[in-house]
Amino acid sequence: MPQSIKDRIKKMMVERLFLNIDPREIAEDKSLIDHYGVDSLNLLELVVGIEEEFGVAIDDNEFRVKNFETVNALADFVKSKMG
Image 1 (tube, rainbow, N blue to C red):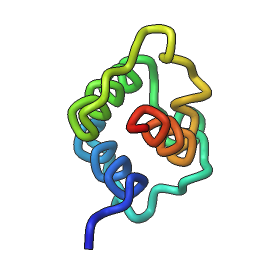
Image 2: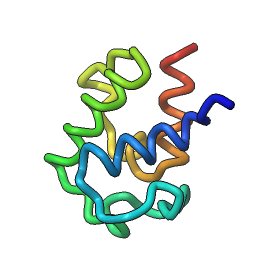
Image 3: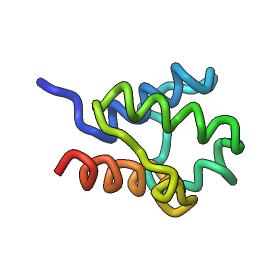
C-alpha cells in the first residue's frame, strides 16, 4: 500500500530534523514551529526534503510560514505543487 503524502512528510521530518519521535505520533494539525520546535534552519531542511521526496521545486516566493505551519498545510502545499 503506498504511503500517503502526510505519512511521507512525517517520515521525512523525523529523518531530516532528527526528531526523537515516531512519525505516526506527529499531529497533523499542530504547529511545527510551536509544538515541534522547528526553526528557520529546519524549515530550509524541510524545503530540500520536500523537493527531493516529491520531485517538486519550491520557489522563494512560496516559502511562506503558512505553507509550512502544520503537516496538513505541508501536504496541501505538496498536492498543489504536484498538480
